[in-house]
Every structure is written in C-alpha cells, then in structure tokens.
Length: 308
View 1 (cartoon, one colour):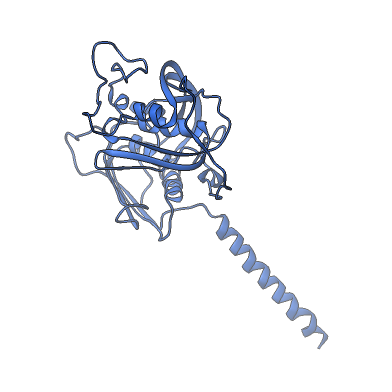
View 2 (cartoon, helix red, strand yellow):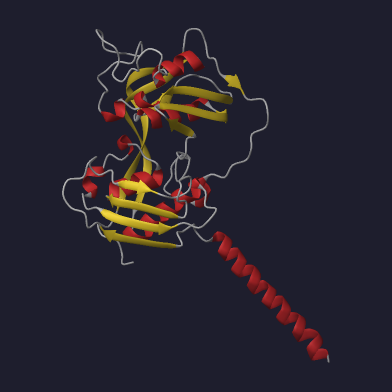
C-alpha cells in the first residue's frame, strides 16, 4: 500500500516532466519547411534576366503552401532568404552559375518572416552556408531634411508588438541579422507604389528607401522620433539606380544638367520616389560618394546540396 502511494505519484511526475521537456524542445525547434527538394535545373542555355530565376508561391501569394524557385542560382537563393539587394551581396560572382530547381512545402499559417527563416535554414542545412553581415562604404544616398523642414506625422498611440525574425537566430551584426531587413510593407500595383507604416524611425525609413532604390541610404536627418509614414510614388521609377542608371540625375538631388532624370514619369503620373520623398515627407535624397551599406559576406558554402 505504501509502495503504491509513493511509486505511482513518482511515475506521474516523471511522465509529466517528459511531456513538458518534449513540448519545450518542440517550441525551440528551428523553423523548417515540411518537405523540401533541391535538384540541378534541367533547363539549360540562356536565361533571361541573368541569375534571377523564377520565384513563385509562399506566404502572401496565391499559392502560400508551395514555394518554387526555378533555375535559381545560389546567389538568387541567398538574396531571397535575406531580402538582399544586388549591392548587398558583392561576392555573388564567386557563387557560381549552377542553377537549381527548389520546391518546398510551407506549413499553413506561416508568416513571410518565418518563411525567410525557413529558407535561411534550408541553405544552412543543405549547402552548409555560413556567413556574416558587415558594413561597407559605397556610393549611395543620404536622407536629409529639406530647408522647409520635415512633414512627418509623429506617432501618438502605442505601437503594436511584432515578432522579429532576428529572434530565431541568423547571421547578424548590430541587429541587422536574420530579420531587421525584411519585409518593408511596400505595395506595388499598376505602375504605382505606396508605403504605409506606423511608429517608424527615420533610420527605418532609410532602409525602406534603400530597398526601393537598390543603393544604400544613410539616415542623416537628425530626427529622433517615431512617425506614421505614408508615401506614394511611381513604381516604374523607383529603382533606376539598381539597373545601372546611376549616372542619371533625379531632380535637384545631384542630377546631371541638361535633361530630365531617367525614368521620370509623364506629367499627370505619380512622382518618382525622389520627388515623393521631398514633397510628401519634407525630406530629400542626396547623392553620396560614401553611404553605409549592410553587406552579406559568404564565409563558406558548398556548390552542391546534400541529397534530398
């Protein structure tokens, strides 16, 4: 009788402890795709758009449960996983031109941030990718205040808590790691683009602008508050510099004399992103020979993935 009174509760405690341990381990498990396949691409010959490949599916698309990347190089996959602009992956040429076809099943309810972490983990596991972020001075832009002052609306209500992908681990430095440079909230439709965000700092706005322009943007506004930002511009002219039009001017932002800026929309169309920043926010983008760029350095990567 005494034996039962002691042993049975002990077994119950041990069983409960095992359940709690399994549950804790499950919660700590890294985000991964349900199933993922990586195979050498069977499509050969010229690829329109270089190494860009074709990305379809995943969270926020009509097919959220299945992600496909067809004819994608390692550079494309790394850029997708960490949301990098071309200038942020200076070693892309050393990654080779071998193309892969990737198919990955995404669990229902996965957020865009979680999806990026899954893709990061896939590259680490299958290609033994290791790397780190660092800062480098490159040609770009400074974000400054116009002579008439900013037109930003300061936030008044409490911000809503959001989870950062950086909490899940990644290659990071100074908070830039797995997720500080993720989804920007920019929506493009019908040749126009818009950005809406609350409780944003000027530094966060500078990162969004860098994503759209395709060049680094330093925050030199001196603004310390948090703002509710609304910005509308012509989506067709937002990334001229990312496509090599850096020599062309952009209004009074350091442009070349004797002509209109490359990509400027016709009268009546939405303004360029350079014009929109000035007229709508009271800020300006000024060309700079040295702007701080957050770049991703690949320390090691295998050219072929482990078997499926």
